[in-house]
Image (cartoon, rainbow, N blue to C red; front, side, top):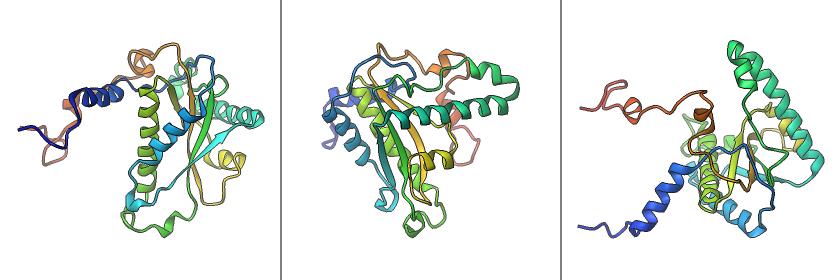
Length: 218
């Protein structure tokens, strides 16, 4: 019996396609993003689920070229610190392209609001659910952009306190992501880190357990 709540098959296929073909983009092509298009992506993000409906996300659009340069410099500094922390893989890491801040059409800093401790519903034992909620919003943004042929890169190479100061964020808030958004010549056929040989996606069978952690389904 057909499920009356299901979308038409073409819509279902489109949802799964966007999920399958979403990529963390580092290479951008010239061209501006139309304001109404960016608003659609932000609206998709704001429609994301949040624990206790706290909606902890905030999006800061970077339009000041000086601020964009400063964010790029912070990311580059953290890139060097990360390479050092990686030890023998540091050289391999330094050959990777890890951001597109200076070449993308739009830069957005995504952050968590201050005074999050007042939100108890769903967070009493797991306060990190505010971060999980923010990640869901970013994923919505990502999928909406992919559906419209726009690339997004999530950059997390920064010192949170330094980035918070750069962006004038209040005490207690927390930057989560620098999103690079823009046109692309094409989307990577697979995740870039997989193409570069950094790591590979695990098989579904390797990450699915049943009843007890580590036990494969019968």
